[in-house]
Amino acid sequence: MKISYPFNVTNDDGSVLPATKAYLNINCSSYALEKEHADKLGVPRALKGTPLFKLLLEKCESVKWAYTVHRELYVTPENYGSHEVPHSIAAGNMPVFCAGIAKCNSGSVTVDNWTGHYRVAGVRAEEDIRLAWAGCGVDVHLGSMINNSSSSEQPGQSNAGATKP
Image (tube, rainbow, N blue to C red; front, side, top):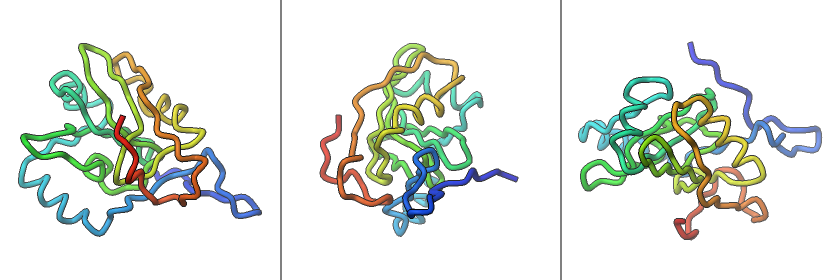
């Protein structure tokens, strides 16, 4: 049985405690088709600590990654053949604490928080990324961070319209 850590826990004033802020897939209505397409293509999805996780970081130029509310880090290739893989596939459509793209290069990764399916930003982005990638067996460097923490968007809204770093 998987443990789902408490997420989007609120204070008495209704504000979400920063350490529990999670983001939902804003394109959840398209997930079934995305999953069907990814399954047909045979897109691999790997959990941190597995041989497949290590292999994807070694063989892929870049991966999409998601750190779910189960406190598990998953990766998929950013592109599989000529198809871009959505973050929802890496996340298994679960809410995430953070997600993004990692550029892989000989035992190191440069990680950002770019995703169109989840709005992940704010004051905890770097802390969540460090937590997600801790102990993964490669050197981790932070890339460009998207910070929507000052915007009026609500959790569940996307980075749509933002420029990919």
